[in-house]
Image (cartoon, rainbow, N blue to C red; front, side, top):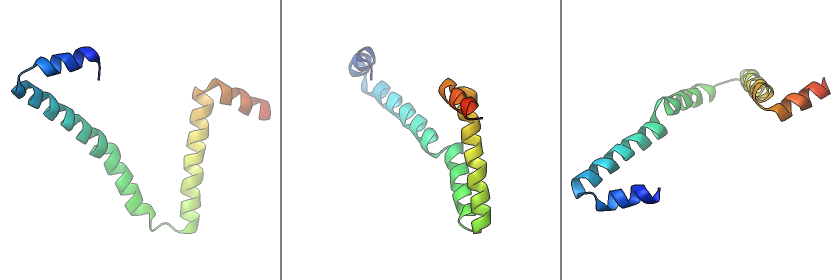
Length: 85
């Protein structure tokens, strides 16, 4: 927390401090349990029943996605992959 924000918070009346904390709590809740959480939970519920072949296929797909992302966004990995090709 920045020094200025802490000073403003400390000098604010209690009702305003409560409002700030309520808003911050809502942001944390959305971050922790929002759409990303729901997608992850859904994937876990489905993937627990994957066969070995389905799991291997899913892992391969995800690895390809990560490698593609690394190649497209990180110059170091682009050079390494290009040199290896």
